[in-house]
Amino acid sequence: MSRFLLTPQAELDLAEIWDYIAQDSIQNADRVLDELEETMLGLADNPGMGHLREEWADRRHRFWPIYSYIIMYRHETKPMQILRIVSGYRNLAELLKKPL
Image 1 (tube, rainbow, N blue to C red):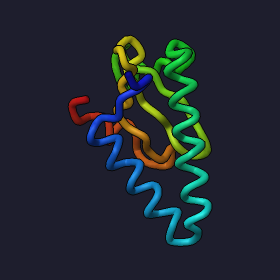
Image 2 (cartoon, rainbow, N blue to C red; image 1 turned 60 degrees about the horizontal axis):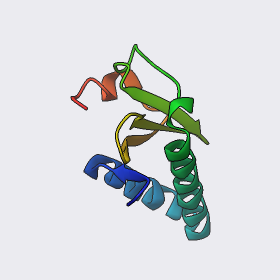
Image 3 (cartoon, one colour; image 1 turned 45 degrees about the vertical axis):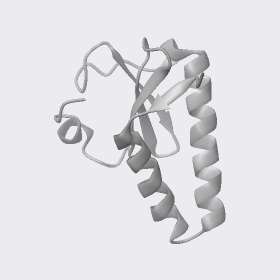
């Protein structure tokens, strides 16, 4: 059983991140995705270590930064559910107005 599950939106987020970085360097794109995966595995092992951001989502959700990205996940699900992986430069309040 996988320690975490990516939602379809999170899978799309990862593909978009890889595509964006790969425009400059495929090697860097691969490295960033590997590090994002390692971080998600670490969060799955310690799901409570993420941050609450009640201005963006309810208490079921946690947020964790890596590089300029933010991983949004539901910490109480088994396996842990990764909802989004987005750039911290985006307007997260607006982005997260959509149902999660």
